[in-house]
Image (cartoon, rainbow, N blue to C red):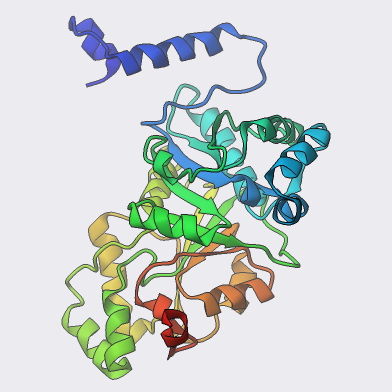
Length: 361
């Protein structure tokens, strides 16, 4: 039942709805504003990005590490009128904003949009430079979370986060453990040219969209046992992985374009890029997606071949994978990649189990 229906029937909107109505009224009264008002969080697909993924803060990070917090804050204050240069997540965020613009054309009053939240453990004093940079690049980011040195992970659920992107692997691991879709982003030296009109998101399958249950069998019992297992259980859906909910959120927005006969011109396109073999282990994957009611625009089964060359063709704004050697291969060929630290793959590198005995000592 909608808020309007509850009021019409004599019900009273709760305090959150009253607060949101006040915010909406404020934006509606500001007829001259060029900034669209942010969507209601419960309706939006919320993307939380760290300041170091949105902007290039390598120099600032070095000041912090070499000279300490006080000098770092002073450095930011001295340069607060100088915008940061774009970071690794910047093209992804711009693509999200392009999708929002298309959605607003088709659904002027809808709040089913992407909402970007800047999440950082920076001191609030640094906020002025961050805001100036966001305005300089004309980014629509109205929600900030600046925690002054404390971990921001505890706030992600309060912001109703659908995806969290950071350069801090420890924070990403913490968020994954909290059940929030998260990934560590890595910079490329030479990024591929990306689409200005279509958001492209590429996902690995096992331990990203799906659980690592099948990958465990590969690692512990080999490919032959894995193929037998997948054939036996091809009609049993895989359990969901850490990024299934994000694909689900993308699908929700895609369907809004399909409803307006915009499937061919949809500004969101999704890809499955998996090391699985199609004939030997592909059926279960496709049936799992079908059982979830989710579509994937393109499914690429590589049978163990490198993913980098195909990613050059796709040119995704972001590629998610759970294994670092796939991340590294994508980076080398100019693809923006994000590591999902989940599942048994974290114990292996290039097919070999990582020896942690020295670390444990």
